[in-house]
Image (cartoon, rainbow, N blue to C red; front, side):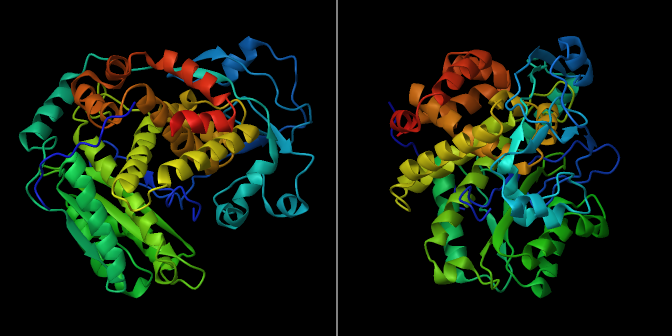
Length: 472
């Protein structure tokens, strides 16, 4: 049973429909000179693999544990091979191998390099879905080392500082919106409408600047200058311009599709949030909404998704960047943001059928992902160490996408079904702010994280029809 929508009084202020596959990452804790690490999914790090001819089927658990050990992970159990084929490659830091399936297309085998390097990553992008034509050996599940407290004195001092400047409270100052001159007014209007709806519902948190990058590289430099002075005032302009500034240049020059990144300069004396969006462009590098106005609904959904990250960050005062700060699993962060985006899009009437349509689509995406990587679970992206290991195992960003967006969304819809939307959007974050993720999760949702994983795994074994019926 779901509660009705609640509004709070506030100040005014892949081409594939994961929206734009937004990547969201808080900045790393600075040592001497902070460099922001918010990234977009255009950029994938190099993955180094080692060759092997076959997989030994008689390896002991001791051998497996030794080879896949990680300082913050503990072995729990191993899965059996998903196929009996000989495997051509083995990632060096994960206990797995893979091979082309018997049904793999010649086009994929000719154009999709199994060895991912920095040099071939761009050439690989047009064929990224060829990963679904590989057969994967199961990955060993590892139980993360979970931090449940107590919070360190350093994290407490930082939390006190953030609260003293109103980080976790609603703001009276409006969201600032900036756009390059080539961005059409309908895109700006749709963005503004979505931000207003999101702040009306959640509250106006910030300070926040929202940058919209168009499709003309010639006009993006003034925006880069403003962005660097807003989110990076404590490093040189040259350093910022070569980091996120270069990402903004790439956004304006690369098409078709859309991209974005977001983050927070939480450690500044006057901490701020930012979001940079490059709306969808077609094959001619024209804004998709010019010929297809329905694309504006996708833009509104993406905007709501990203604003929810701002809200999440405002309620996270014991920053995980400090030793003894509270982390939050990636699937929960992204799943909740996507669930809110779908919720708001339907509540505002932008797309009355979006919950049914997106739930059906995510169920299909998860089923497809599990056909390729049958052993993957939410636990495999619970911590950043686990996520890095899973990314190495998968050979693709697509597996992280289906876990954190697709499976994450279904997990949030599942939790909302057994509690309420209010529990997802408000009750959890009120508890999480002081108690941390694991205690807040157990208190608000009535089960600890491991019990939830078991319950959710059973749910995912239901037919797609039964899953859809349960969640809509």
